[in-house]
Image 1 (tube, rainbow, N blue to C red):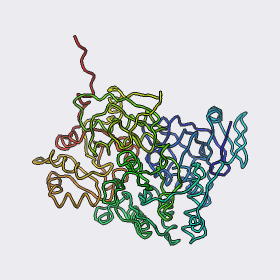
Image 2 (image 1 turned 45 degrees about the vertical axis):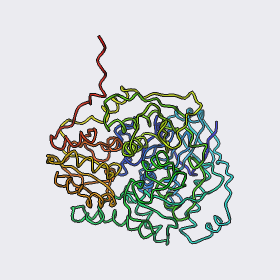
Image 3 (image 1 turned 180 degrees about the horizontal axis):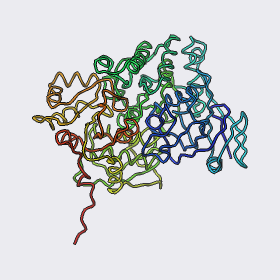
Image 4 (image 1 turned 45 degrees about the horizontal axis):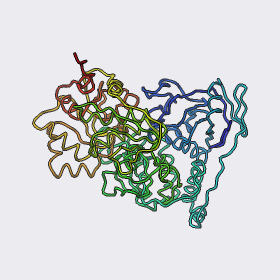
Length: 555
């Protein structure tokens, strides 16, 4: 049995085992330490003080910020134990210890040690051992063979912010098994979302140290409409810190793009470009659709890389790690609509929670369909990319017997999981990830000449908003009664911009359909963009679409 010490520290507590990965952002309430992901087996369980075991994490890169906040307030698990590589929560624990003296040990166990610990009721982690019931394992550090260039060593001897950045990058490189660092051409930082006060504490500490990005760096969606939050009635107790967080990253030289879809910007990378992106949907899209290369970087590490232009050469930066390891055949129902794609992505993530898959038997898809699929896949899988046979840039059938399937019944089950709420809806939520200009045009065509009965909010980036305004699409949407909001994304929106009287929302996003119950506390419905347009007028969500129903048996 092998027990590796990834982040050092001591701890003791009851063992809680998660049979599947958990996203701390959108899955754990920072105020209570309780699991709020309604779709997770641990829903409702408090993780505070526990030795939390899970195969790996999944979902949002912002989980590192949530873990840091839990550590700062004393609500964190006592320790984290993984069965395979994990970056997001590991980085949060690393920052908690290095910057704020809040120790939270992280271990990685081989399969036999993991299974043995999972049978225990309590565990103790000392400086040298993991002890639980009749189990006692010596803790060993990961072997490291990281070679630094002269320039890297100069950065380690540089100004405080750059030195700290390099120290964190080197520590993460060691736990990833990287032997060298590589240049990246751009970064996209996700830590500008005000997930908790810890995000602001970290960003302002770095800015006050004089941190400045050295490569082009875009910013994710933030938690307020930066120019209008006061007029929207957002309380200063939230709007002030959220705006300060965005300002801190702008002070450090990041571009105030404020979008969770950086692939829609004019700075989109090209195939083969090495970049350093956070934001789970963007990472999956960049690797899968564009063919650029980026590891799924956690919040905080994204900034560290932006400050140095250097990243560990690990994971999907390398050719060998981009090869699909599971073949998933998909039964595509005839007559489907655009709700197909997030359903496929969501179920594919469940079928491949810890490895890159290749999907077969899919029809042609436009970029909006792929955007929706990538976002949903990144919600349920820890993998940073997927392939589609005959469609995505690097798709090649692997020599493997590792196969799975997605049937019509599987897609229908996912649809039902997303549609637990009542049929009467109060809010239509579009733009998770941020809506593209094509999606805005399609929605405008669907609603021309009608008027919404319920609240409709579309979130998008400033560039898309400006283009929609210039061509008249925005005027059509506003005449319909839709509110188009920049800067925010549905996964970062809060009251009162999120209408407080909402009871049930309808979304066309598989990602938001998963996270919304925990993030908003509301019941959720899911459907196609056309379903959203109709429900905005009728106030009613549709039932199971005909293309997901089992065909009648032949006589």
